[in-house]
Length: 427
Image (tube, rainbow, N blue to C red; front, top):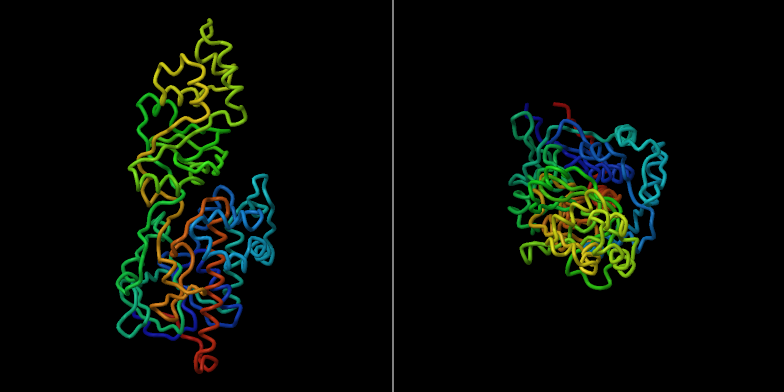
């Protein structure tokens, strides 16, 4: 059924964290808000993020927090200062969701779940009059500038005073972030930085033996850096998992942007692993030299001298030539900086998040698209990236809050805005 053309103060296209926060900010100012989403329900990727414990944000000093956004921090700084991690925790508390700081500095709901927070949030939005229209896939604008959607096999149109686009990136398309928005925005002359995987695994060529015996095995208590990092870039400690196709996990995600850029420029990236970060090189050399040339096997020497066993020992054998194990100095150096060659990031659809999107110079300080006055952009649609650890959600909430407030302020200041009757959105 064609719903027809209706008037809305603020139309929000996308029901993920950025879109819902835009609805939160806009409705708090009294705007009449309608949220459109292509999926049958909102917040699907948000709910998936809570499967292993919803990491809302990160508790650290703001300068260190902002540094996680690398090239995007200049544009994100005022937005995150306006909506910092403390504001996000206060927002959760308003919804009756208590949060706590884990040992790593990550912030979680007390029950670790995302569903209770989302459920209470939607109740508050509906109580403010926010309308949620599901199964509306955005197609772009028609010749008159109205928003067009595919719904139930038909094209339907809506006229909004202002619009916030918050449709996510291109990862996990089965949950709604399929980047279908790229084509209509590009057709409107808006510069789009190509979407690429961020917070993703990387491929390397394991031997059949190593793959069969160690795929799925975590590599714990290691440090890593990307070959080519400057001397001031300290290795990051953490863990990751050996996969069938290569490597994946939180430590890899923290280095993903640098690894990806190295692959783009030189066709590969070398991940440099310290398999014994707590042991200085000189101490490792001495320990390995003690058993050299004696009756100990190499495996026993590694176990006694460097606590290297299991997958760490197997990884050394996977990467190093056999002769390296006969020289304690060479072996110790390899344990402290083992080069694992990565050939490509895993596909976009598998990534936790994406880099690229609407170029930041296409939007103003309020995230309004300069070529499309009255249309704002928020969340992963914008060209920024961040590692996991709460930084992704924080930036989505911060950009959504700024775009929602700005869109509502503009809509409510429009001529005769206060005289509008609520739109009749029933099919």
